[in-house]
Image 1 (cartoon, rainbow, N blue to C red):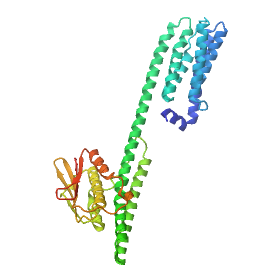
Image 2 (cartoon, helix red, strand yellow; image 1 turned 135 degrees about the vertical axis):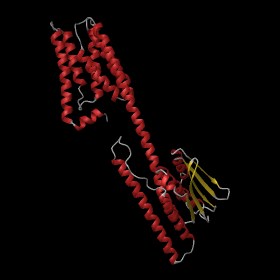
Image 3 (cartoon, rainbow, N blue to C red; image 1 turned 60 degrees about the vertical axis):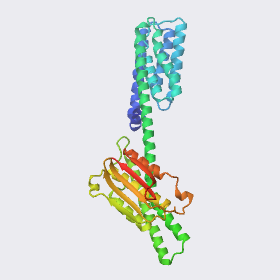
Length: 387
């Protein structure tokens, strides 16, 4: 919705007053021309007067009548009268200022709001109609240049505003697409890790004989993982609600990252409790000089890599996670010693978007990510994040 339409909806009484004022001004101009110039009223003068009144009424933005209906009607009226006077050999002393201004108003609205194909046909009709209004006069050269220049200026300015509006719509669509991709990554990172742990524990209990005490322990870990998944989803919904309440054009809300460097130790401890033991190394003093966005990205990469380890190297005996500074920035390395994949269904295994999401996060910060077999055996993920 255009700013003018938004203002009209917020101030209906003022909008009605503006429409009435515009109509009265244009009608007064047409009436003044008819009274002053038609010293000897004739049928052509009456046609000009009726044409001016109808076109001026069409230019007033009344909500009950669609813009295109008013514009087509105005174009038909003005061209009918113009052609009748030109080919009927009835040159008159007329100004046509009111009718020409009304046509310019309609031209601007059509170029701004009408569909592209309609604007490509109706716009030239209105513009040329405005230029043809002075041809009705006995000396058209006095006004033809003026209205021609005004038509070109109004048309060019309206097209420029239309292009800017189209560009804004494209940028908005691009932002929405980026937000959807970001939310998809967030949902995957926050929930997939916990759900994978639940599925692994459930399948382990299903295919092995466990005692009552062992079953109670497994169910406890499943319950804990489910609670953590729900908590992660609640945090994501909270961010979504805060983003939705923020006014357009005002930037993103001031929310802190969901997790960061300080949460990596909690993450590895939780993973060790339900899966393979994790050895964590964090360079001393790293948290004090690491930016928040880099720390959040490092946390996401570690979480996704551990999730992949639980899926694809379920029998690994150890996992190493290291964070240290290198000349290029922060190096995040996650490696396991290999093993067989967990017995998961195709649905539980996912669609292979984990590595894609990690790489996108790293590249978004200007970094890089590599994943593949490690020299010692097993699988290794290495990310370098500049800061």
